[in-house]
Image 1 (cartoon, rainbow, N blue to C red):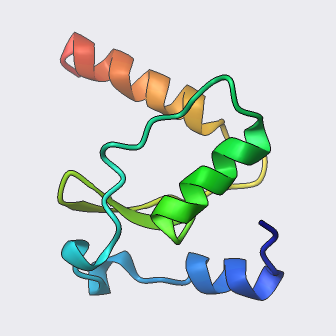
Image 2 (image 1 turned 90 degrees about the horizontal axis):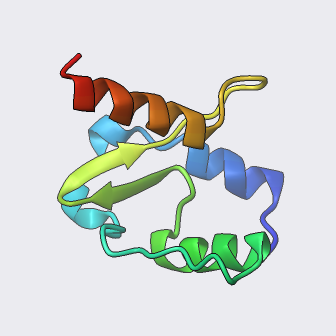
Length: 88
């Protein structure tokens, strides 16, 4: 599945504060299968989420933003979980 720059810009521009969480696809049960290629995992996520940047997890609207040269999502989530476990 290939997206145009315009489609990605439209997805990115969604104001998560103006969107009701119950109108977003709930991705809570999404499982990533390591046996699939990266492209296949992305395609499955896109089929469920419909928007790479905005979706719902457990009733909470989520918007993901990426920055050039910033830490990876995996590193950021790992740091968050370590801080949460230590009570910070």
